[in-house]
Length: 246
Image (cartoon, rainbow, N blue to C red; front, side, top):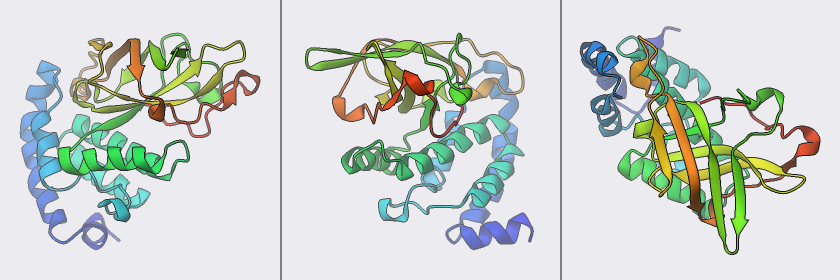
């Protein structure tokens, strides 16, 4: 089965035709954004307007709960026009799907994120990679730390290769607590909180418009509901259940 009939089968009516029209537009813009090093917000807005950013959300939340096969084909098609936009979209699909099926978050927090994706085109990615640790896929404790100060929780650290950086609204940050035997897990951090800043460190030609810069967290205060389940202790190397790099 070729891509065209497959996508026509798994996408809502008319979306495959929209996708075919978007690809040449993305191709026309790609070189300009790669030269500037800026993320193509035009492309992302086009994808939001056409309903693509929310496709991996559950149907109960207004998405289409598309399969991994569909994700691969959609991202592959968009990459023909602009691979940087395609990578940002791939992260959006993988992380919204993982978030929907995770046990770390309450239904209220999930709904909050889902509504922001549907209504605002909010983008999300998982930030795991660090200068010292690299990827946590093979174990190791992150340097990024969550600490409790009275009734307030704060996160500090830095994450590299943060695809989508300047366009993200949400980040799932892999971090540890500052206890003697630290717990390790995901922390949901809105990008607009005070103390979050972006260090422009990504200059790879051909993929500059992914904006995969370094994101720094400097004593960022976060609501407790965003902490997730910080349950994996140092005794198991802080190994994450699922390794999805940013």
